Figure 1 (spheres, rainbow, N blue to C red):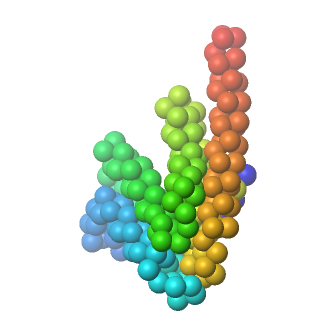
Figure 2: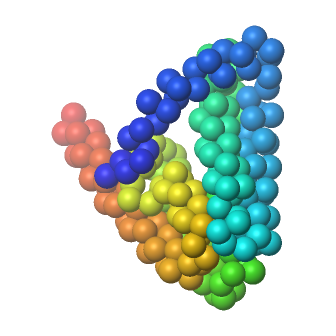
Length: 199
């Protein structure tokens, strides 16, 4: 169920040298969160204003940077002992803003209603994961269409111009991801509740 999220440990290891350099320069993890949002905004602008396939290179490069920053901010905070509750909130807000900005790049390419549906669907997996964490369950990530897959789909749209089909896949896949996370969460919480009731 993890999709491309299963590659996160491998990807994080590849970024180890960059993370070390950032730590030595005392770069703030919050600055990396902000950089990720800016990279997403740049990708959205390129997607909206450049024709396919000319948009493919800048969109792909900026979304790769967005994913790298999303990986580096939390890892850098942990490595340098700068994990804070404010930082955790900023990280979540940054991730949601970046997701929505990328989808906003489709506004010039597809009907408004479809962009809105895709944007709403893209937030569902995170809502479920955060609700589960609030209830004391482990944070559930990954899925058929998680953050990494949404970036990949945006890059496909930039390369091909197939904005409408991509948005349909993104919306349906995100909704499925949210449903699968919810089913997993429901089982986890049910097991935990039964265990506590049996004590």
